[in-house]
Picture 1 (tube, rainbow, N blue to C red):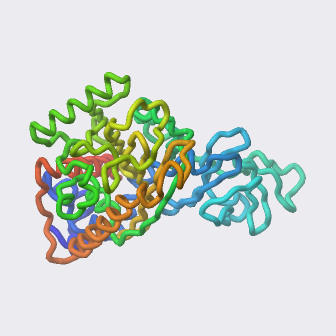
Picture 2: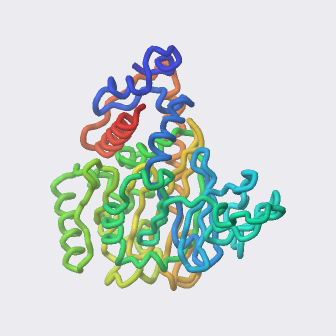
Picture 3: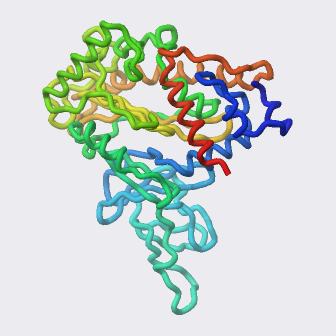
Length: 411
């Protein structure tokens, strides 16, 4: 059951394919390329789940804003005059024009370029031209989007009050990331990659390191190939993991593996390989100072995942975060951000090339892998194949989560 013909023939629906899929196997071809399936992904996943969209450090000052689009929804994120970060629909309440056209900037007010309706930083309409007497400004502000900020990470839900509860994710994130003091972190660098692959292929590629030994020699200088984050490892790996967890907990730092019941989000502290201390080419810290009040450099890597948008690495000296957004059936945007402690100064406390080179190289390698896979799964000859039960357990968990969400939200 592969190939795109299963959907185009009209004989088998998306939901039928999910119900008939083989356990621990890749998805049938249409899930990775069919426009109808992609629209279903948007409606059942992306418009319904909590999504990581930016860092508080991306909008550090009053008036700073960022824009993005999720499917058909243009969005603006801004820090208001009161210091509160809010997300709003980037759609003028007059004639529907996009209000903020730039990807980022600083503004005192948002002024629609079409007819100059003017909005305050919290989205309230401040001024409208040529309206009738008695026009209600308060009823015509930019439409708000439910927003949560946890440990310096901004999440939104397009589902509003009907969306899932964010409290369990916030509790986990606040606990594991509080010691890093990320509300005061600084963005040292950011890169955007557009991969010619379906968003699920991008996530699947991230959810395993089964390919790392052959594909990522730079990354595996420090990052273990063994699937410590899903429970698969040798006895030596288990001992190293146990030692790291014990060290972290003894210092009052949450470190044990914790996941939501459906595996949508998780956190853990993981040791690096071979006594390395950071994700650099040498394994040495890239930044000479540490986040928050962390007591030492050798505290491993705090991993934080949340489907469908993000995976992240938090180390004593720096953090690397990833935000994934679907652009189309076979196109995905990946934003990588490097965070450093508030007081770190480029050229004094860190070298930008040393900080970023491992993941810049790894992203190029992963893009090639995803794009080759995209070409293959579009072939009429493609048939879903089996995942390795231990080394690709993380992929199995993601695909199971995806299938369950899609089916529970079927019409």
